[in-house]
Image 1 (cartoon, rainbow, N blue to C red):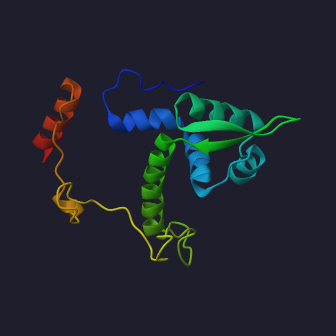
Image 2 (cartoon, rainbow, N blue to C red):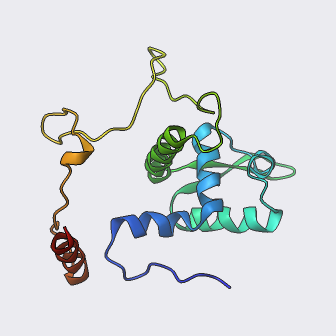
Image 3 (cartoon, rainbow, N blue to C red):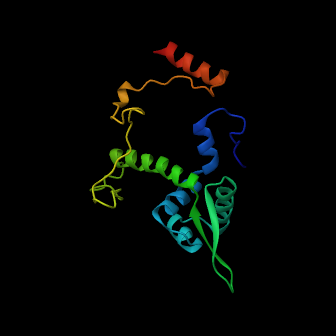
Amino acid sequence: MKSKGFEGMICSMASVMGALGDRWGALIVRDLYLGLRRYDDLRESTGASNATLSDRLKSLQQSGLVERRLYQTRPDRYEYVLTPEGQEVGLVLLAMVQVGDKWNVDGLPGPPLRFVDASTGRAVLLNLVDAQTGQPVDPSHLSIEAGPGADDLTRWRLERARAMR
């Protein structure tokens, strides 16, 4: 049974989750973000069945996150690459990796992946920054307000949350 989609929901987060589809979509985008491109590599990395992988790749293409490119003829073979939108979703997954590294539920001796600046080799982190100054913002100082695209339900959520504080 397929779960209900997010159509009609005024929520940027729901839009991204809808584009990813499910956990398989997130793992595929992770692998494409890492640089894997070939179907067999994606299947090996994710452990997804052929049916699941094929379905999710088609869904990610329809969502505009992934592009299928011919790399060989006779027989035709394709690779998969992230679109610019897919690259942006990769940043969401990077944030999840950063949180997972902090939680370290598996008790690993260190993070499984390191994200570094290719020119310096220094570690990089996603962080909250002031949109005007570029200065870091402490997450405890974050406030959420209705934006110009907010609908009545979004405003209700914010008012309800504010009343509960």
